[in-house]
Image 1 (tube, rainbow, N blue to C red):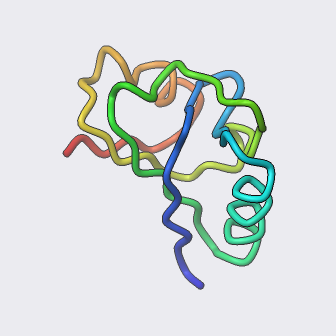
Image 2 (image 1 turned 135 degrees about the horizontal axis):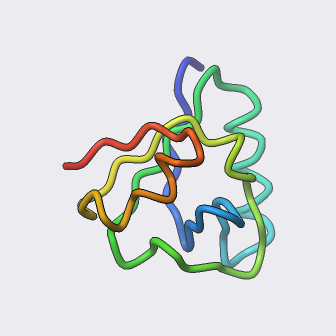
Length: 86
């Protein structure tokens, strides 16, 4: 696939993408590995949160689509992750 579109249980600029369930985390990791780009779609409420299972480290995330404003997403852009505000 060109793009893996992943949801988030938690998304933290230092920790990365995380999921509540281990199987969900494994499937998302496999999807991202099979794709050229990993895109995370998440609401502002998930930013800065960490769920139980790390799914992707920040360097494995290519872009984030979120309703959060630039002040909430600044740590991600600083980490080199493209952020689309929608």
